[in-house]
Amino acid sequence: MRLTREAARISVLGAGLLLASLAPAAAQDPHAEIFTGLDASNNATTGYLGAGYAFGKGLYAPGWRVRAVGALGRYDYQGTLFGAGADLGTTFDGDASYGAALLGYQFRSRTLIVKLFAGVEAEDQRISPRDPANSVQGNAVGLKLAAESWLDVSPRWFLSVDASYGTAFQQYWSLARAGYRLGPRFSLGIEGGALGNEEYDAGRGGGFLRADLHAIELTLSGGFTGNYLEDEPSGYMSLGVYRAF
Figure 1 (cartoon, rainbow, N blue to C red):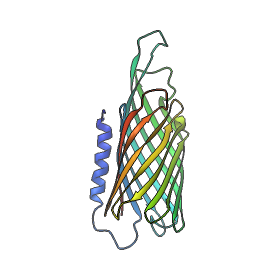
Figure 2: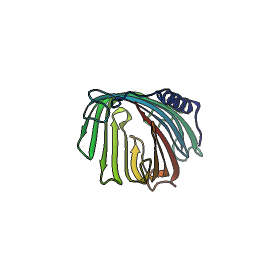
Figure 3: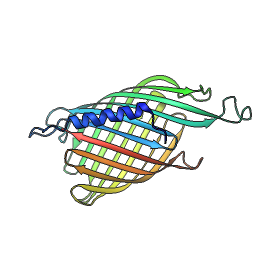
């Protein structure tokens, strides 16, 4: 896995902000959140950093909230530069940067939480050498929609389903998880989802382990990903860090 300096830098920055937020919190419910992480497969690595703020009674209550997220990544893929049969194949290297600002509302019942977000996104895709057959290149600005949900099926079992769609390069992402709480601090489960844009479609499936370490929540997941049955699947690993304060 090739980890770029930019992806590493954004994750280190996120970790620094998380550590800085470990000062003693007030007794009231938290209103702010910071999250960061890395996602890597055999040909792509992405680092992301985001923050949010909930108005009203806080993050755990129904109400309006805002969120901003940024990401940097690098990937490569195989293709042909001059068309099939014209060359022996070319490796294309891509660099991606992304940012979004969102406004959302959280609905909550006793066991169900649903968050809906809408906003604006901007994305920059640079591929070297330039691939004339790939439309996902250059700059694009568009509408971003996102939804997140959490359901406590029982004191031990829970389900979560998250999804997003952006009109910049028609990018989509979804992930569903079914988890089991081993105790007050640890849980594990299975996950599966789909992701892609106007040039490719892929799926992933695997498992996850989550640790609630008082102030910080860590989620480590991994499994297999690929563009369905077209190529051999590759492994993936994802680490997410979350802090509410």
